[in-house]
Picture (cartoon, rainbow, N blue to C red):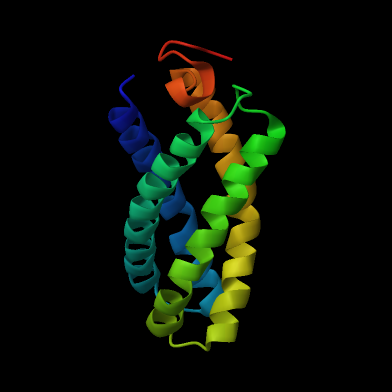
Length: 146
């Protein structure tokens, strides 16, 4: 699969599942209407979608220069940490303003979501790679599979 098409498909699938999870969780956690938290989930997802594309482009660029090919558990963990760490920084002010909560409360909420999304990002990427094959940056060819 072409790298650009692969990154777009991966990001869209990832975010659709994220919206379905985040909206109801935020509604319950902050006692806000589901309409409001669904809107927030869409905004957060849009930010995350953009970050996903940029981060994966940067990660695959770095990965293509590595001597060892493939995606080991350590590389998948590094990918998850980098993606989620950057995302927390980007989403903190948005959550604070939208939910009308302090930055500290938004940070704590982000930590809770981070726990879920850290595992989810690794599992999703693994499953995506199993279904669509590894990218050329990890396998050397577009058709490679684990």
